[in-house]
Image (cartoon, rainbow, N blue to C red):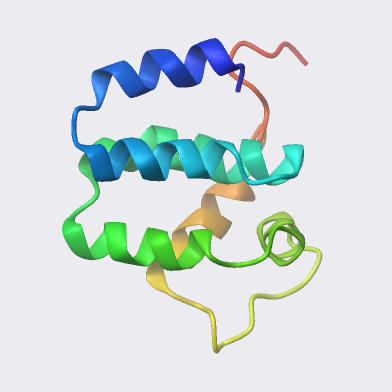
Length: 106
């Protein structure tokens, strides 16, 4: 997602915790994970409950290389890190067009 789009989303979110998590989700370190995780978080951050925000924070602590492999289906998600949040991310990441920037024409 282009930086301008992230800024526009962040101006709509007033809760500092949600703003911080949205920023972290879009600035992971690898473009693939930025798009998959950042896109998921951007679509849902406004509706997450406090416990879901806790789960999201735990997911954001995971390594990019592992997240990219798990979300793309290259490797299965290990039981010891599987959470409802990570399962939800993985399910959305498997949908056609997941990880594509908004407005991207195929």
